[in-house]
Image 1: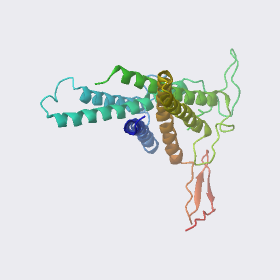
Image 2: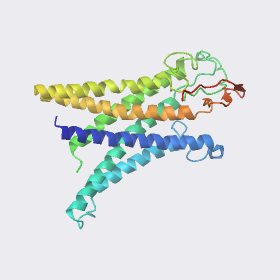
Image 3: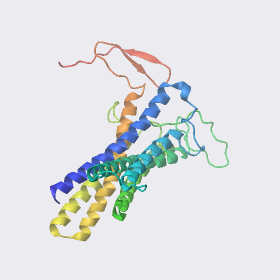
Image 4: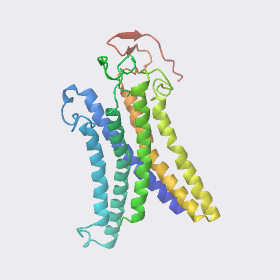
Amino acid sequence: MPEAILDKEAIEFMTRFFGGTASALEQLLFEWWWTNHPEARNQFPYTQPEQHLPYWYIFIVGGISIGEALLGLGIEEDPLKLMEKMDYRAKEQLTEFGKALRKFGEGGVLYSVPTLTHRTIVRNTPLRTVGGSPPTPAGQSETPVSGRVIKL
Amino acid sequence: MVTQKETEEFLIRLAGAMTGGLEDAALEANYMLNVYPGSAFPYTSPNPKIIPYDDLIVGGLAIPPWVIGALMEKDAEKKGDVKTKELGKNLRMFGEGDAIYALNMCLEGQIRWLMEPRVAVPRVGAAIVTQSSGSQQKTDLGHKITKL
């Protein structure tokens, strides 16, 4: 494999990886805000669209990365032909920027979509009571749940 | 112009990332269903300041397909085996997707883990206040010796 292609591939990987990192940091920012601002709890975006789904902020993080990818794709493809009047060099540079932005957004999607799936699965997993009592057999009254086990 | 090939490559990467997400979800679901809180491997931490092993395992599982795929691709290129090269490339991209999810998940988890109030940050010459799971607080008069 020629070195030039390897370098290009490495740069593309790094662009995607940092896109994923940006999404992870956005998510962290929302969680930091939730921890440090108790008044924001139970308010948008710390509410759920539906009880089986994760909080809105997880969707927002995913939406931002999808937006980045679509914006990049729009710049790259230029469906409205807005770049037609530009000179060749500027057009080329803008197309490259659009391509990089699309890859950055792709990285964000690669982080946020599995995160959304992961959170949805965990949210819908039956909870065990604190203290580790075995699950109650069907037909018997359940042990009251004293707290939710959350692994951070 | 986004080609059909690029779309396929993105889908392979997404499949890799989803695998990472599902591994993570499976381990966490197992924790919630079967394991007593904080008692057994892989739900323990190698160090109080490091995220639990289950997250590190998900991060580690992303590396083999990535490395194996890259080596397969390189080896097949030397031998001129186009089919194996394509397989190696796909495996590498699958691993890349998994790595993008898993390594960022570990990074996010690690920062969050360090931001947790129960993790006391030792300071030289200062009393360390540790906050246990309850409302109890105790003063630890231990000192950290730093080599200057």
